[in-house]
Image (cartoon, rainbow, N blue to C red):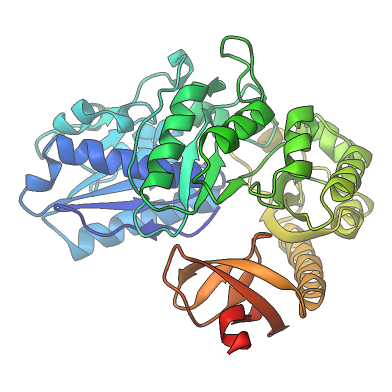
Length: 437
């Protein structure tokens, strides 16, 4: 779960985004639909909070931001949507600060914003949230830009058919459904034509893409089709994937397509087989290790990130140590560590819990292991040539998604550079043109 991103005010509408890349993409659709509904013409303007439900902390942060927005802007109309609004609509509707609560399906439709109620309605009237499991299709929403972003996100899939015991997200997003492949390609063409050099494909369970489409195309076919039909795309990146679902075409694309970035973020969650079974994950630790080894043979420059949960219920010290060890065994570089957070309504919330202080301590140990791995990765790159996408203020990302300070270039520009060192947090890069001079 990432920190909230406050979008720029556009026509009196401010969108505050919490959580995943899919939310970031959807926030642009929401902004457009809210503008179409005339929301920006309201006296005092409107703020839309696009929430995340992945942890209890994510929900707490959203509520804190809502209260702050009301204190600072007494006249503003506040709309709350996203996964937390979908899973607990009445909790947000009960907040005096909130004027309207929309579900994840409703938030993408202009009519939902036209239904903004008058002040003083009861909690039931505030909430416009339908059963997300009744949604069977995901349309391809066209956007021209991603506010404040050097790279653009494109949704290829939504929802999830799996029921990991710790996860509330299927109840916020519904069952898996794919965006038709032609719609994805057209969206990528539009964004590439508008100057985006890097496109990131995103979804809730992206490697399940295509199962509900005619012919059941897989993610690998989609990737190859995009690269073939949109030659203007300089860099294509994948967001989080489930390695156990990686198909042969995807592996072939990783091996043969230089425009497909050498960076994969894996949904591992644990390095212990018993915990993985209790999580209802579909892979075992040896499968994760073997996947990383096999992909590294296909693409030696590949960089791996991963999500790992610390302190899952029933986790012993030995089980936790297996998660610590898998950081090195998989060669992970970019680690996202989540202290286990029980979510009401999930099976894991009813399992024997690990003491909170122990959960926090294990998360700290995992983060330390991740920082050590990242330090080794930084130390391996001085003297190499890297292609860096500039994000802001002289900072950018390599093809392997490693942060680099380069001191030149405009956001969205790709600069070829030589890595001259690192400062422990990022690479230090010099533009090749400057070196030649």
